[in-house]
Image (tube, rainbow over all chains, first blue to last red; front, side):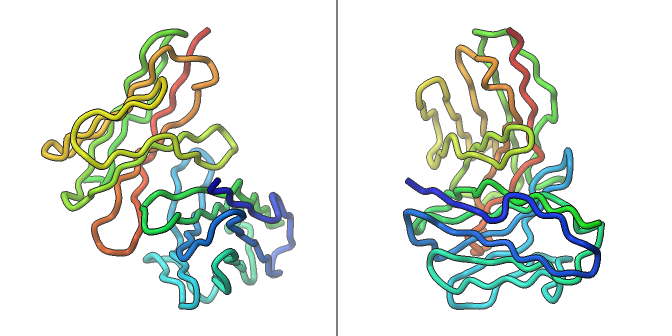
Length: 115
Length: 112
């Protein structure tokens, strides 16, 4: 149980374009999903908390107009990186909470390369 | 002071030995504590959760929690080369935002 999928697993895009990443909970309903970014040899950095049916809560320093998050259903959250630039190249990982627990289950991640 | 502190390592142990990973945290309101394992290039995987002071055992893993000392640890018995990974400590955030705070992780190397 508690399986989270992400799509795509990797993507290469040109500078200035937008990229959408999907995060799905496959066998449970996730009222809360999280989006993280991880640069090489660094730890996870929480970008935003996404609650179904409401606006995402962004961490300090994360541009909400650049990283658009939509949690349209209890099993799907999307992250859109708008007007991507090479410095946005990173490993983006989503996670989902199970019930009211603080336990988070992670998707496999999406490796974004902006050229 | 960092919110969650872990020795970055690498911690090298021989195969079959006990690996001891330590973590201190600053948020006194943290009530839930998690250990995640992350292999290089992969996403984190939840391996242990602990909520009460004391020890919690699951297979070869034992988590230890001391809230008074704001300290949590993970012991891995009979370490295997497949245990070589980065281990992330993650206490819950008491600010009511349902999130946890990840440490920078300890890299464990199990030498065959």
